[in-house]
Length: 162
Image 1: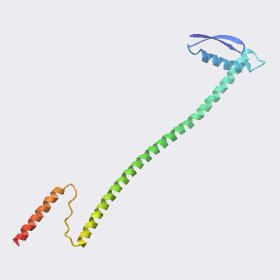
Image 2 (image 1 turned 180 degrees about the vertical axis):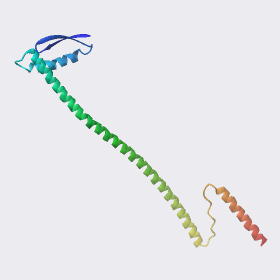
Image 3 (image 1 turned 60 degrees about the horizontal axis):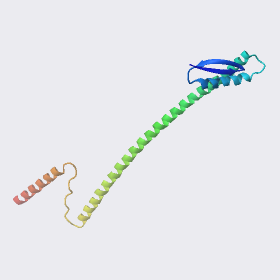
Image 4 (image 1 turned 120 degrees about the vertical axis):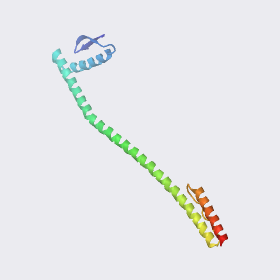
């Protein structure tokens, strides 16, 4: 415990406080002394009473301001959280739209290639050139090719028999 010597309203006081709190206690005593010296024509006790009442009033006003500010800060926190949530949802939607756009672009390129191939085949037909059947597409390419080869072999056998 530390001992602190204070002067308030012209009177000396020796007070004990926790170690490290001496300067804080001196500052508080200076505030009380300032309020008490502002009261003229009263006894020391009355000066201290009114100083204490004025300081209590200031503390009460400060608490009221803090209590008014707390709901506003809660509202602001809620608004910020909502805005952050909406921003995250918008980012997710943007990523999904970009993915859809990328897929659509790919599908358009594939369709353009098919159209180009079909136009080339059509041009060959117009010119009277024999057209080779298109290569099968997909996972079963090999099996389809084998079936096509067997059909051709059977067709050749049937032609030879006739």
